[in-house]
Image 1 (spheres, helix red, strand yellow):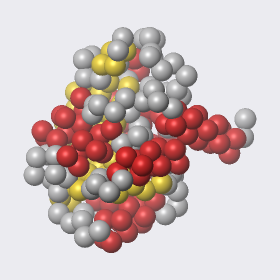
Image 2 (cartoon, one colour):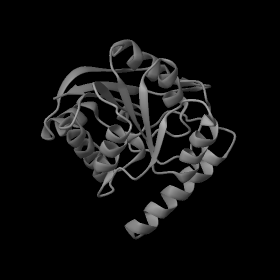
Image 3 (cartoon, one colour):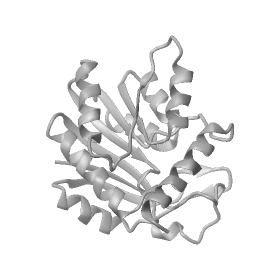
Image 4 (cartoon, helix red, strand yellow):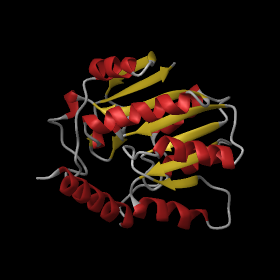
Length: 217
């Protein structure tokens, strides 16, 4: 199947998913962990933000938040939830888009967002292919040249591949944590924290085997 057709199918899947009423709004365990690790951060860039469940949580904790997703349905959902209240700054763009890093920089600059930040991506890396992972790390590298940022990611590992899933129809690419760390090093990042296991991302009967990684430059 041509790559452009795969991309269209991928977009259609996520637009349908985020337009449904089946997406949880409670913040993830990972978002609570990141908030506790970076209490003094000024802003969060939430890549692959989905319906904004974690982005809204971060806003309530006092962070300025840029919520980024390729899905139009996801971004519309966030904008609808904001209404007249202060919420995440929603940005629709693909991680492999030519101007993604510049678009994020523009949102930060235009809204006077300075200081220390975190590029945050929960359950995003295993939802994209290797080319997408490289694009994500390049975007992180570009942002890190403009702001003082750390990178915090959580993803399903190879040990999760054979386990039952609550959402079995999602595309998943199960990652080997040491290989991801090595790839991140190619983009100038060092690993400050790495752990993996069960109990970090429970959802109904799905207890995913995940890795949590914090990167810095």
